[in-house]
Length: 447
Image (tube, rainbow, N blue to C red; front, side):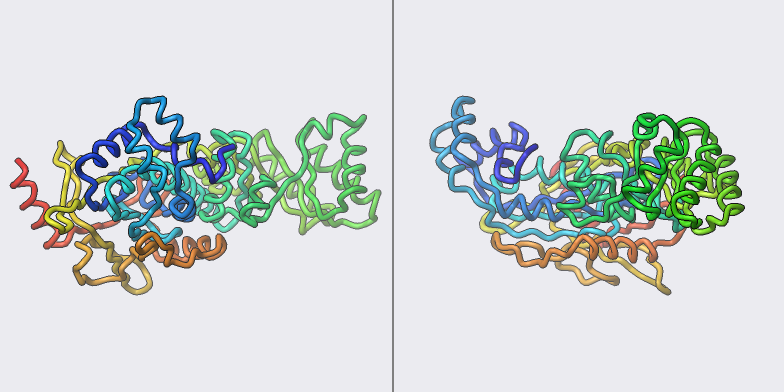
C-alpha cells in the first residue's frame, strides 16, 4: 500500500518534463482550477470530497533521494534534480469544503503557486477529488433511494485496490452511509463498523440451527443471523427457534438475506418474525444492490429495514468516472497574474481567471448558482474558502462527522427535482456578465 511519504512521483511524466523546461526558462506564478465539465449520466449534482487528502499531500510533499535517483536514470538534468530536492509547496489554495455541492464548470479547488509546483500536483489532486467525489455522490443517491433506511458500505473486497476500498468507505460515509464493513477504515477514519457472518460459517456446522446457537453463545442476541444459506424462510424459523431455545425470549437484532426474491422473501420473513413476537428484529438485505434496485424494492413494498451495498457503491458502476479537469486560468506576465484560457471545440473552452462560486438560497432551498471572477461581489453565499496561504494550512480541517453533516444539510437544501435517480433536472448555473465579457474578449484576442 502506498504510504504518505512517497507520493511525489505520483504524477504523470509530462508534469515533470514540463517542469524541467519551466525551470530553465519560465518558472512564473500561475493559477490552476479543478472543475467538472459535465455531470455523469443521471447525476443532478456532485458532493465534493477528497480535500483532506489534498491538504495532507501538499503539507508532506517532497522528493526523496531515491525518487531523484529514479529521475536521474531517466535523463533529467542535475540542476533540475537539485531544484526538486528542495521543492515544497509555497502557494495558496482556495477550495469548496468537503460536503459542498458541485455543479458543472464551478471551481472545486484553485492552486496558485510557482508554475512548477502547481503543475506537478495535477495528477494527485485530480485522482483524490475525482474518486472520493464520485463515491460520495453515489452513496448519497443510494441513501436517498432508501427513504431514510440505513445503508452500510459492504464493498471493500470489490474495490479497485486497497486504497480505493479505504477511500470508498470514507467517501460513502460522507455521502450518508451509516458505516462500513471494513475494519481498517473504521480504525483510520473512526467510522462505525458492521458485520454479520458468511455462508461458510453456516455450512461448517452439521445444521443451520446449530450454527445459529453457536454464534449466539459467542455474540448474544444483539447480532444479525444470515438466513439464506439453504432455504430462506426455514432459516428465519431456525433463527427464531435458536434464540428461543437458548434464551427463552423473542429478542434478536436482525436477520440478513443475500439472495432470492427479496420483495416476497422480506414480506414473508416479516410475517414469520411478527407472528413469533420478534417485532423489533430488523431485516437486513445485501447482494446486487444499487439505488435503482433499492428504489424498485421499496416501490413494491418490500419489508426491508437496512441495506448493505457493495460493488455498485465502491465502483459507482453505472457512472464510473467524472469529467474532471485541472486547467490553467492565470499565469504571470510583467509581474502580474493575467487571465488565461483554452479554446477548443464546444465544451472544451475554459473560463479564464480566478473565480468564485455564489450560491443563491430562497425559502430554505437553493435556487441557482453564479460563477463570477474572484474579485466580484454577486448575490449569494461565497462557496470557495481559503485553505493554504503561502504554503501554510490556514483552514481547520473538519472532522469526518462534520463533513457528513455538511453534505446532509446541503442536500436538504437542494430541491428534489435535482436529486432524482433518473433524469434529474439541470440545476441552473449562471456565468456573471463580467466573466462572460472577459471570456469573449480573451477568445477574440487569441484567434
